[in-house]
Image (cartoon, rainbow, N blue to C red):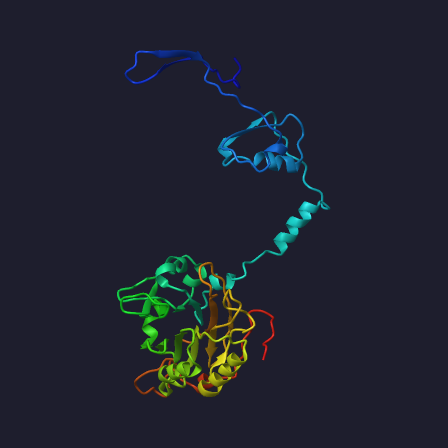
Length: 373
C-alpha cells in the first residue's frame, strides 16, 4: 500500500435496544461516511472546519483565494495534487489598483481622535444625558471614547442613595434624583483619578421644586466644570436662578465649561434669546453647533457653553439613549494652579496671568455646517 493511502479496517459494533435488554444488533462495517465534492464557485461564502482542495488544473488567483479561505484554520486545509501558485497580477489589474488605492488612503474611524486622545495638555470631556445610569452604566463602561476621556458629565442619571456606578480609573460624584425612588433627573461627574489631586472643590445645587440641578467642580488650575439638568417645562428664570447660585462671582475668573440638558431647543427663537442672555450675563457662549441635533427627535436641547474658546466640540454617537453625547477638548495647563499662599515673585512654576481672562478664542466646528445666527 502506498504511503499516501490511509488504511480503513472493518469494525464490529454491538447495539443494544436498552441497558437491561438482551436483544442486540451486531454490525460489521467500514467507518466511513459519504463525502461529496462541490465546485469552488458553490463553496463561496461557506465555512468549514476541514476541506480538501483539488489542484488538478491551473486555478486563477481569485479561485485559489476562494478555495483556500474556506477553512477556519490552516490545520484543516488539505491540498490534493500539486499546488501551483498563480502568476502575479499585472500592473493594470483593477483589483491590484484598488488595493494600492486603499493602502494609500487608509480609512480612519470618525471618532479615532477621541479614542486615541493622550495629550497631557488637553482635557477631553464627554457630556451625555444617559437616561439612567442604573440602566446604562455598563454601556458607558464599554465605550472606549468615554473611558479614554478625562472628565465625564452626565445628566438625567436617575440616581438614589447608595448608588455608586463606579467606572475604572474614575472618581465619581452624584447629585441624586431622589433619596429612594428613581426619577428622571439628577446629575453626575466622573473625573480620572490622576486628576483628583487637582480638584479644589465639588459643589452641588439641587432644586427639587423647580427640577433644575447643577453640580460644579472647581480645579486648582482655575478651571470650572459644571453639569446641569432642567426638567421639561422649566422656565428660563428657573435656569437663571440655578446658574446665579452655582456660577457665583467668587470664581468668575475661572475658565468655565457648562454642559447639560436645558430642555430648550436652541434652534428656536427662545433658544437664541436664551443663548444671548447667557453670553451677556455669565460670559459663556454656546460651543456646539445648534444645527446639529442632539436628540433623535431632531432638536438641540443638549448644549455646551464656555467662557473661553475650545479646541473642538461636537456631537458623538450612542446606541442606548434618545440623546446624543457631546465631546469637548480644551487646553489644560497644570502649572496654572490657584494657591492659598502668596507666590514668590521669581517662582515660574505657578502662574495666574491675565491670559486666563482671554475670552476671544474661537472654536473649530466638528462639521462644516454654518452657525445659523
